Length: 385
Image (cartoon, one colour):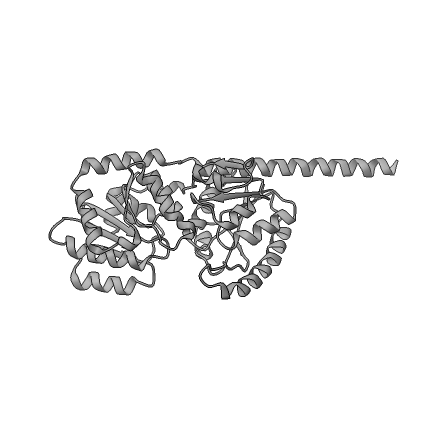
């Protein structure tokens, strides 16, 4: 069985694919798995780091606020489609899974044109335009949120499977995590991050919140800044002796979750799936420029279940964040209830569900190919008599 997984750009599109690949390999040790991505995306490092091969194609998005860049994107994606046709034709996968991101589109279209089974995985509660269109030609579309069903014209191929989370997310040990980050045992820990690339607005608010909480609330922080803000944020934390460990990016994010009593983050679908699985209360700050404001809708799913609170980006300040942190840390009963509520939202078997579907489609294709070969052989035999 050979499976191709296409998608990338940000962690929200890369890590679901890796989660499915790891589960597929666990279920089928002999499975051959190859990824397709962009050299510019996170997948260029993350996929080989997870032990899987990757091939690259060209792809660009169509920025909504910069329509004058569309001709370049159109040419780039046309090249990407030709490259994708070559990759799919030469790799000959039994089934292809698209996990979103710019590169997923050309590969999915090439898969359909070459007549191979195509499955999609949609992370968000409001699907992107590309997946809404590609869903018309896909054999199956795996949704993370039941609310997403209403956005698809075709319904017969939709399945609500949840957002795949890597199994190691649950493997962190709190004591070991505190030692790894150089933090103090017995002190509340806040894990702040703005996604795989960081978020300057959140970094600014977090540093100001640290200043306001210092000396008032006994708390410590893990701050994932992204590479662009590392020097700036690290310099402030060191100069002002703020209680934080500053890192650019976490390969071992499960250890940060293990250390955390509270998470402060954007509300991308991947982040919410991880928060739910580990059961960590959260303060969510939706990215304000997400398509169709889907991060607000994503966050509302946890807020409505009593698993998180939400601060809109336009309302974010160090003062507001400090107040919210202090309020939640002062009420351990509320934190415990939020943790329990988060776990009710989790779908820890999402990767296993999608892996089983991929194996089923791959087996069906192999069976159909075997039947066709038998028919050809019978025809040649009959023609020779």
